[in-house]
Image (cartoon, rainbow, N blue to C red; front, side):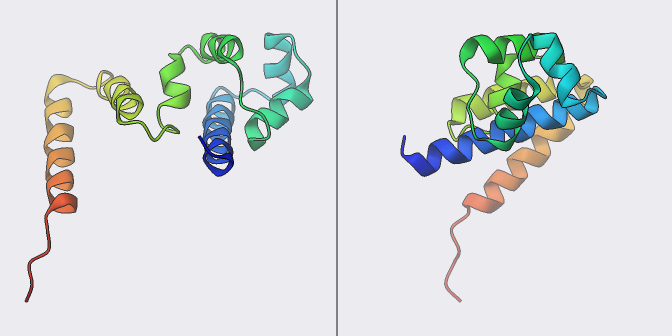
Length: 119
């Protein structure tokens, strides 16, 4: 992974963590206290200056009551990580709503992958 890709990943993961923290109504200091780290460390993670290690991601997932895949899946460019993220989102829905979302996704993918025909 090149330097730019690592930076993009760190920023995306940090943004997800910040969003989860705000959704829970926690300040950076409160989150830091729960993780037994300094609030500057939370700031660096959220800004994308630092990528949290696996142990820290696990602790963050515990605080946010989510899977680690939810913290990195949206940020990753790997189809398997993104699939796990979508799986997590879809699993929260009722069967009928999940079917509707799958139809929407399928139609969108078909439209985006359709080769344009010459006029």
